[in-house]
Length: 132
Image 1 (cartoon, rainbow, N blue to C red):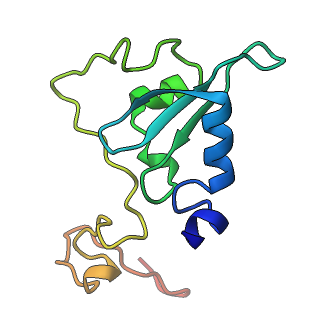
Image 2 (image 1 turned 45 degrees about the horizontal axis):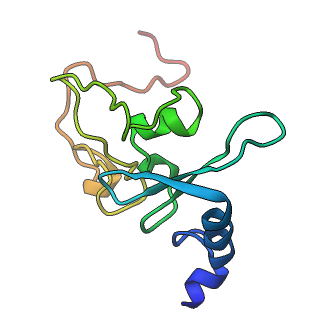
C-alpha cells in the first residue's frame, strides 16, 4: 500500500488513479495487463488526453505498437474498436529487457564470459614505427 502512495514506477500512485478514474473513461486492456483510459471531455487544445496504467513496472516499452499509435493520436480508434492488422512475419511484442536478467547476451559478450572464437579477419593492433 505504501508503494501505491509514494512511488509512480510501481504502477500508478493513488492520486493518479483517483484523477484518471474521475476524469477518464476506460477504453481497453492489452495482452500484458496494461489498462488504457481517455478523458471524457477534450482539453483546451481540442484533444482528449490518453493515459496508460501499467501492470507492474512503469516502462514505456511495455506498450504494444497498436496501443502506442492510439496513445500518441496516430490513429483515432483504439485497438479494441479497430485492431491493427498483423502480418505473418511479425513477432509478438516484447518489452525492452536491457538491464534485466532476460537481456540478450550474445556469444563473446562480457556477461557470458567474454570468450569467443577467433575470426579470420580479426583486428590486429598497429604499433607506431612498424611497417606493414
